[in-house]
Image (cartoon, rainbow, N blue to C red):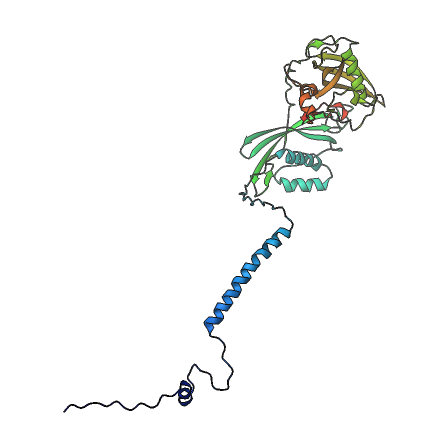
Length: 373
């Protein structure tokens, strides 16, 4: 007999609210009477993201307006620092000054000058000092004449000493003979770190005067007529330049500067001889013609002293007159070229002034003039 299972009788359906009331609140449901719970975390995160996006969109126009309102500033390109390797340079060894100092102390060390003797003994303990008689020789001047390198760290220095001790009777000398005498001094140098150390291994020895070479031929072989325009310009210019009369600048070519002498104590200037590189009649010819001359002059100072001086000058013809364009050394060759202001007219018109600066040393010593552009 087949058994039929009879389903249990179902309870009458109850409403969802009655079931919730009977079963009680679930985990995700708030208790009765409690405030409503905030939204879930995913909802809050989405809201924050939307807010951030809108803020970013709004910040774009604001940044554009701010950058336009800001004044432009120049961007400076800072050059990258250049790293250079430090080079160790060996100082140049100049034994001439040390030799002058030593010889001066040696000449004074034989007298009652104890300081000079102490310094000399500290510099060269093994070098004997001289012993003078009643009077020690009076040294007026001491100068280096020549320095010859004998070995890697050894030199022979030749010095000239001018003595001023008078000698009335050559058979009874009271000191060193007056005049110039020459001494050779051995000097040794050793490396002592940053500066070389010198030593004098032996006493000085008196030697003969250096030889004098024959005078080379002068390039100034042409004659300049007396009373010509060139001769008159040379005389007037040197008279003004040496301070007898002012206004030496009026003899200069345009664009030429000639500094004045430091001391102008001459009362008169006389041209004794005037010669040119090439023979000339002394008349200014075409514009741009250059003549180089050498003037032997005698300048007389206020006390009556006469100074024989020599000047090598270059003149250029312009507008019917001679103008000074260079003060030279006198050693230039016969074919040496002289740059004149007229040769730079084109650049001068464009605003580039060409200046030849001529410098002469005190007491009329001639110096080389250079061009400054």
